[in-house]
Image (cartoon, rainbow, N blue to C red; front, side, top):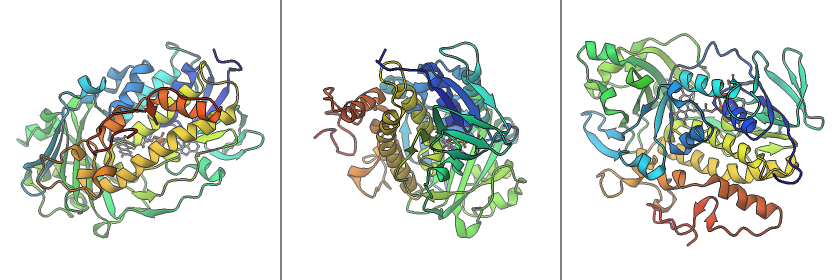
Length: 447
Ligand SMILES: Cc1cc2nc3c(=O)[nH]c(=O)nc-3n(C[C@H](O)[C@H](O)[C@H](O)COP(=O)(O)OP(=O)(O)OC[C@H]3O[C@@H](n4cnc5c(N)ncnc54)[C@H](O)[C@@H]3O)c2cc1C
């Protein structure tokens, strides 16, 4: 055990995917955790969330019961022609687990959330079960005293506060970060389709592919349909993007009244008839407001840090928002564990920022690029030699699967910790990546 290690009383503000993950990681590191959630989870979003190996690896390390999330294990990424539906670019995930040690899961958001919540709160498992207090909306934090005030009048004091309160974070503003943000050039409507119903109507059974499938997304156009099978393939979750001037939902929130299906079909007169027939039986059609946030200058202050969308909200086009929140949580779990934490919360949060901000903002920028060019999306970005429409902005800067999955967070934490303590870091890694690793963008780590 590190000299000076002490048990912290941690308050996590926000009980979403990132907040639950932080609670799991920190209870396992030996701390007591209280989660404060504004809602009571009754209005959770009914859409899919993918979890690539860089997220799944932590679910395994934490002993999360992944079967509870009823995931689909993805077998490929398929990009289809907008009008004909013929594959234009595919990326096989057949050797994914063998290569990266973990599968690529597609969850239904509610199932994923319940799976994480159970793990955070249950008696079984390492550490003290976290406590969850719903209907606690954070209103203010006294940064000097470390006291939080909730809208219901309750006050609480903690050694460490984690602001995991999502894209509209209150904690972020309290830390003095007021983001430069603008509405995205594209809009998105989400719809759910029951696989059974589609099959009964004689439509294509897309669940059979176990693939994340895309129509369009090439040539700098905003039109793109993203299909993700979840709930073991029983549900098809469709994200439908189109230019904002064909429908502006920037001020709408999830949970408002469903939009009529005609509104979903209207922007797509030329779309492949097979997938359009699926959209025509779509239910729970909900707008997803899309805002582009520039990277934040910092993500911690005093005894408070930001995590997940509160710290680095990103466009959905790399499917990495949830994974980045899980990685943030993993970083806290490591930095505050019994080997590294010497009792100094300020030092620990500085290391957290040094580990998380560069990696998350790199993914954030890559997600914005992939919004109008699917070739920038991890996976498709490796298809330089086998996709006729392949084109990226800068070959050397594209994000690759290697950078995401060959990353060793323990090494990254050690590098930043030794630097802050004025010690030497001797392992052959730079920012968590092994020196000598050749990536498909032509960059060799450390060259
Ligand atoms: C429809 C949709 C689809 C997505 N698909 C993917 C995907 O395929 N892959 C992927 O990796 N990511 C995906 N994402 C992104 C991913 O869900 C988010 O990046 C991820 O949930 C971030 O987790 P979070 O905990 O930061 O935020 P959230 O999960 O949004 O949780 C924030 C929590 O904080 C609570 N809260 C807010 N304000 C307060 C307050 N003042 N006090 C207390 N609590 C508060 C909220 O009620 C909420 O429970 C998707 C997001 C959406 C909306």
